[in-house]
Every structure is written in C-alpha cells, then in structure tokens.
Amino acid sequence: MHRTGTTRRSALTATGALALGAVLTGCGDGADSRSASGGADAGTASLRAGTALRAAAARDSASLLSRYEQLAAAHPVTAPGLAPMGAAVREHLAALGGPPKAASGSPAPAPPAAPTDARAALRELAGEERRVADSRAAALLTAGPELARLLASIAAAGAAHAYLLTELAKEPPA
Image 1 (spheres, rainbow, N blue to C red):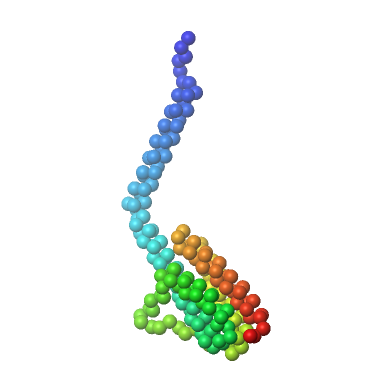
Image 2 (cartoon, rainbow, N blue to C red):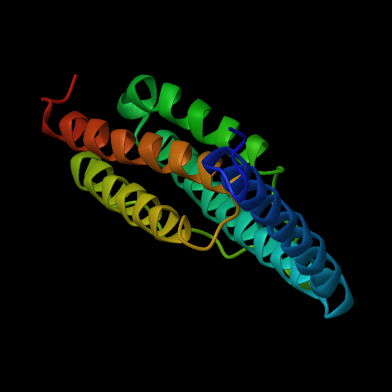
C-alpha cells in the first residue's frame, strides 16, 4: 500500500524551504531599503560620533598627562610614584590618536595649579582620574564596539590609577 497525501517529512521540508526563502528575502530587502533610505547617512553620523568621543577622550588624557607632569615637577618626591602612571596615560593618549588638535589655533587650557601640599595634590589628581574614568565608562553606551573596548580598558586603568594615587597620598613623605 502506497501512502498518498502529505507526510511529515515532506511537510517539514516544505516548511523549512518557505522559512529559508522568507529569511533570504527579508535580508535582501532590509539591506536594499537601508542603503536606499540613508544608511550611508547613519553610518556617517555614527563615524562622526565616534570621532567626537575619541577626540574628547584624547583631550581628557592630554589634560591628565599635563596634571601628572605638573605634579611631578611641583613635588619631586612624588615623581617616582607618578612615573608609571604618567607613562600609562601617555600610552592611552597615543592609543586614542595622539594629542587633540586645538580648535581655531587656540591652545588647550592650562590645568589648575597643583596644591602646595603633595598629599593634597595627589588626592586632587586621584579625584580627576576618577572623574575621567567615570565619564569614559558613561561614554561606553554610545561608542561603537572597537572604541568601547578601548574606552573600557582606559577607564579601568584610570580607576586603578585613582586607587593607587589615593594610597600614595596616604604614605608618609620620603
């Protein structure tokens, strides 16, 4: 006896073929409609936003590096403890694309003068590192994947620097 009609195997095959066709058609239409309706504009806007985030992060790193250098110069006793962290900030600046370009030829604002007390200056720098790390962590929500990974890494390093600076401020002067 030969079975006539629809078997389970033929029903599954037909359903799979229809689903595959729908998926392939959906993928093709979505890509075409995105490019036709301004997908390039969205890509350009995303690129501009990423560039702006990177430039802001580079400005923050340049400011932090300046603060490290200023603190080491004002309080030479802190220089050995600050040197590795300053070098890391210099590397962060390089990873972000180097020093930011000054807008309209105006120089970047000078950092505030370091306090005369080395411990107070270290605590102030720790606070600045914490603030910058927090702003970079907040920027992760709008950054693209590659920039988000870089910012997350730099934010984690900044949080570690803040901790180390706080501990360095607690040490007795040498």
